[in-house]
Image (cartoon, rainbow, N blue to C red; front, side, top):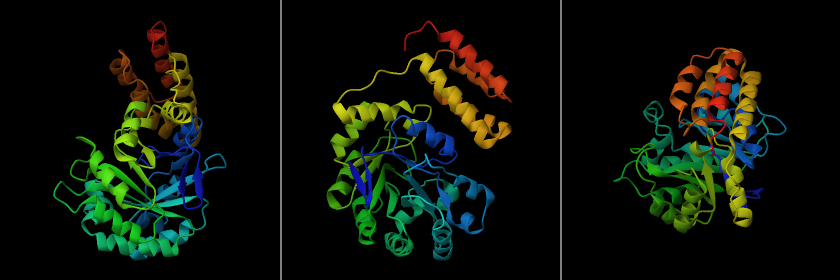
Length: 326
């Protein structure tokens, strides 16, 4: 069990926020396979303050989309406070503050991972958020700005001192972005230093890597990001492992296609055909990872403009691999 403030999760697994990925259809699909807490994709405080239509749509949720987390990005107190006021009208369970995003367009504004270079400022911002939030507050950090930066252990202590209820840490520096090895040692140091729950992320693509993260860091929970894209079964796999040590069998081709069709239709229902098809093209690439015909079918999928076009590509996938054993 994982406890963050008053929020209690049966299994210590969280669907992390991913830009352009974590929309309502994606979250609901992963929940069907055992995901309890899911995050909306990162919300920019300034954009929310200016009442961006796109940002407000990102906050779309529903009764089945619970418990829900919102991650806020920003560095200017006035915009963060305005965003908190707006978010107070929404119903969710945990508010996370992003001090981890490595994107250049984010860090050059002094947001995201750039705050790792200013731990006192980060502490001050977190104190303000904790004092003005109706919900438990957590923070997402990385193992540092680069290999020569202030240790993540020290940064995490500044964060804990601000009154947060949990800390999420990605085991790579800003300089690494999403390449190179995950630094399990640094995550372990952070876990040993803090009294609040530590949720780790980085390369959790399988039950074996999940076990490695738990074993080598002693973390309290896992935040799953890229490992869930095109693979909602990872939550079924990990809950099975945690529940009784047994990993469910891999999905069959028939099961994969059923989920693909469900995801396609939910994308179209939520976003409309034009936008929904464009978004699902990327998901098709992830769903077909490892298939021998993937490259050829992806080329066809990226030309699809309607539901009928995409159904034709999925049907071809079925016919091409129906006699293969996965």
